[in-house]
Length: 234
Length: 265
Image (cartoon, rainbow over all chains, first blue to last red):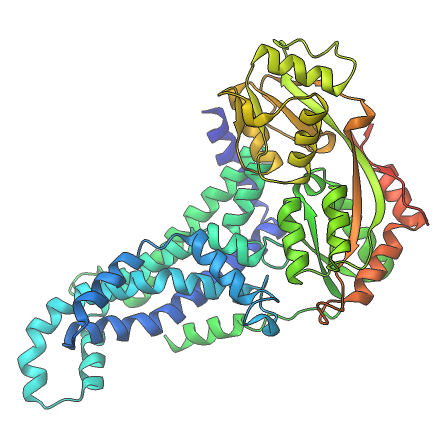
């Protein structure tokens, strides 16, 4: 119990003094995970919606695969991205290993199936409602996808936030592809792993509380920006 | 939404400074805290920005083989010599050494305090069958531990459940040992810096067998033309200079000197 109090105290001290290192790694955590979220959403939202409206031969298998990929182990993703981006790997010439870009790539792979799968679930219901209308208006598939995404945006927000949650709290993959380099690729989760390794539980826990606070802040900010959960707009 | 995208895109422009190099080092070197004083000194004297990848010796060697770092600083002589012999590194330069120590519960149930050699201490632990935590991650420390068991004519493969190979870094292994009240082999620096000592104490040290030599190996540009040979050379020159010597020899924790500079200029 003492350790937890010490952790709370450490978190409080870090935030009040606006510790330089803390600000830097917090911003980098946000940079990596928000970028990964945007890229993953750009891929996953249209793809998940398209899956809901389109009937094709391997649809069931595709959806089952997508659902299974939600449980991708981050360490494995990290290892595969590492081998691809390594200087001895196929994309080695780009020199991306141990950069924030490599971390973004890994996180996009981890969260895209999650967002696509949640999108598909939400859109399937909506499509049942919109089906007759959109068919009778003779819309193109692209128009149908856009309409569904726009009208289902509140459900999609939940999917996107779930993806963000998985990205910001993830450590296995970014530790491998980012390398936890001080001032270059260190983020909150890898810093927590490092401090735990040093036996400095108070600082590790302090950083953990900062991470939780950050996740809360981002969720509130996005809800405020998109005006959900307000009176009159259910 | 558009503003959000613009914000996110602006993050992409991560600038890489001109004079940076990547150095893979072992967890034990980094946990000692020496890098925290060494790197700023390097930066000040040479302008070189050294990015550290803190991994086990096994992984450091792999990173060097793949050309993902420009040089490595590790401590496992046999593996380092093989690294150079196979053409992955240009040469091996000895920089400094520290030493390993045996940590255990302060009550010392295996009675290793009075042992005269490391072999004797390990034999006592095996005889008493008290909990022992091994790194088990093929790191330099783990290789050293296996070599010491071999010197004591014992084979960890034959040990029963008292021998715990945790497959983790030095700090994480010390955390485990602290939780189990177990014996463990650690480098002196990591132990002194370790904050979660619990009921553990340093019980045995000083056998020359337990000295721990660090070697510096630049990655061979013939295999990996993109490596920053000039920067790696600059760092080597600094590490073996008198400026490097004064920082390495002058580094202390709680008044104890940790590293001994032994590079041949």
